[in-house]
Image (cartoon, rainbow, N blue to C red; front, side, top):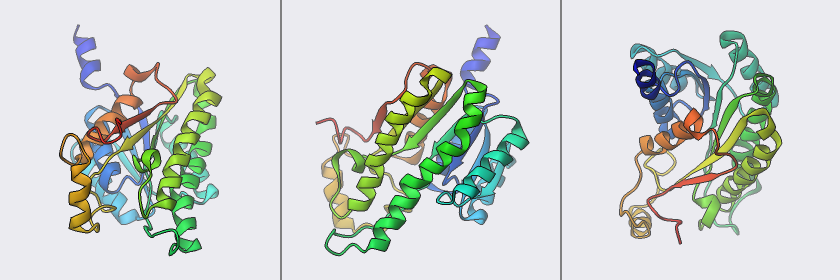
Length: 256
């Protein structure tokens, strides 16, 4: 009984989890929830100072946490990341593809650079990270990949042709890869957050924020930890029979 209770309290006990964009926002909250549930964390961010600050906070609370500076758009960088984690911990159990940016603009005004930057980080970055870790997961015959998509990838968003495309593409990546690796007991799922107060949404005009609020049946924005709880569930053994799915954590926004 005590063993079961311990397992229930620490459902990610000893799991080695890589979280991209782990230095802030949803990524940082996910790292905190994972640590509380027993995981050993690798926080990946292009901003090493931010990643190290988040990792130090986790270590001060007793968790095992490593910070790595990685450029997810560079396949050599993500390959080196996977090699470092495997060398350090011996395995890779969970990958959370959370790194992302916005470069909002109307299509007629959107530059090619704004399009490329968002697609490269949000979609190509996830592709690179998946490719970097998948061989080790297949060797283990186990693994969890959770991609952070968005309601924008499900319903679209004005001024976000690039972002919505990247997040819709991430859903396609999730479903295709889930089929490819299911025979090796690796699951691939996506979480699609609704509106969350993070660095990416802080600069939105107040009027737009109020308009968005009216569209949410629960009449509030999500907190980052509420997204993290969904990610932690999909990364756990409790979700072993769930793959190729998109879990919208959006207060009911997309239920229509």
